Image 1: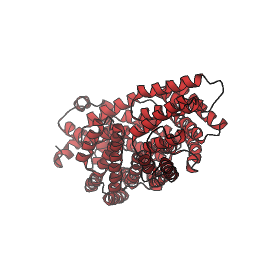
Image 2 (image 1 turned 30 degrees about the vertical axis):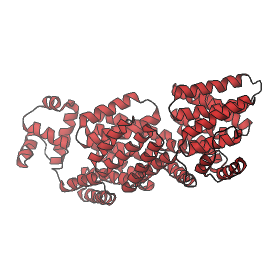
Image 3 (image 1 turned 135 degrees about the vertical axis):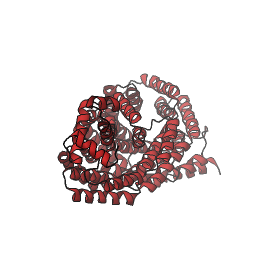
Image 4 (image 1 turned 135 degrees about the horizontal axis):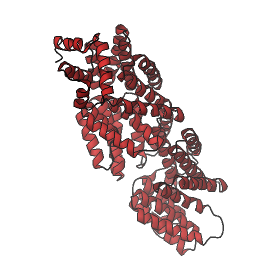
Length: 539
């Protein structure tokens, strides 16, 4: 087959998005023009062959310099900078961007290529923590896209502005910008690599702020986009992660594990170990929720080996294993390191749960209030559910069943609306315990029984076992583990101060526990509580 036939077949394959056929049918030689070299580089990138991609781009750069077409050379240098960044070769990437900038410095006209180099500037300033500078660059990218009618720059600029607005806590504004970026992508106006980048950025942003409705809608679109390109390698791993996250939300744990295993495989193929660590962390979260704590710990360990910190899931695992001090220490360290509202919103639900279990109720109360404020600012439904759950946990631990019941019912409604059976069942447990605390034992047992049925249906083994224990412990002897510890020390004759020192608590917290114990046992003195403890074998 001569070169003319090869080119014709490759161009037809490119239009059909048969990326492997293009990569296999062409090679970066002097016989290829700039458009065909760019098509070869794009196709090689999309099948995960970065070596061929780089050779095609380098050949295109040299050929356009030799032909005295500096602006075309700038385009090839821009893509070399982007691909080298993907490979983690940041110094080489910076060198190519500098080459492109020098070529543009010789241009007296305002040309669209300036907009492409602003994309690199946006990412560079973001890495330096200069959000204002990155936002200015993103607006510049969008401006060039508008002036030169370039859909790629419009989409990339809007995506950058949207993500940066979300980082700054302006979540509704950021999501609106991302929606606008997706218009061009959904209309197939944006080239394949930029389309994949915008798709994934959009869904990742939705996951970060717990906007599961948007995440579900765009994950469906991304899945269809990927399925229409059977040879595609990049973006498919992230798509599988997002599908796994949504399946977990809806209680489909086995299917979620399948998707996350696929994601890990794709990330390994794409040679992106940190992303594989993300998939393993998500896998660990699903295993933890389903009750397989040993497998969850293994997944978290492997995630850390890939360079991804598996938090806050690992801290929640430690808390579930009774390692309260380790869990508390880890979550406090994470909160101390994390200051932007988006990242904190992903830590706060776990932090409240862990600190309540560790009896650090004053700190848990403040964090639950912060989460409630963040949920109001962001306007995302799932975050409101998380805030209501956290508030109910705090009120229940403080012995305030009336307040706990209001928040738990609100959480139950939100999670039912979102179709999240696991979280809805957790809220029902809080409803049941609050009702019991108010003296309505029959209604409390009914709520706990509903929660048990939901946990059993989705395979949440540990949660189901805990609810069974709660149902078996009815009446005034239904003490928490911490309350039993306090009662044992009371029965041993210890004072509040001595109990506080022994359990590393404040005297105020010990007094609160004693008040709860007296209420649950229906007694009014330490002597009567001690008698109850001896009579029922609690000491």
